[in-house]
Length: 147
Image 1 (cartoon, rainbow, N blue to C red):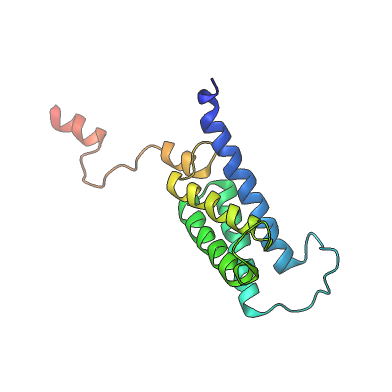
Image 2: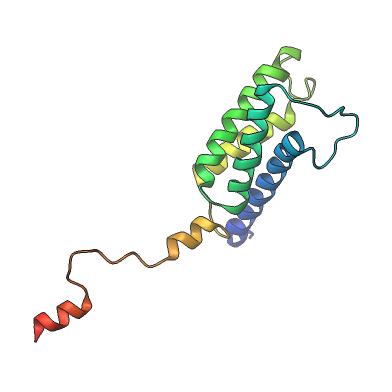
């Protein structure tokens, strides 16, 4: 019944997941949006790298530009975040507060296998006509040769 909306639903999943992920990176690197209870200041180097991946990969996923590669990297980052930060507090994501990292990891893994889809810059790039080969046999030369 809803199968015809599947490409649209997938595009919305990609766009929203990319936007939310980029916001996490923006919050870490730029302090925006401001988080309640944070003291500001400098971040440890690992958090700077995480924030950079979240911001850049999130925007790539959002706009659908190399979304598969960006999502694969993001999926790995979220798996590492889950096992480094959340898993030491227990295996259950609901109890160790790791459900967001786990959900992001698997959503991005799905996006990595599926690609950018519709409503993406990659889809626009694929619709461009192919560049003319530089063989010297363009339409003008072919017309002259036939005469």
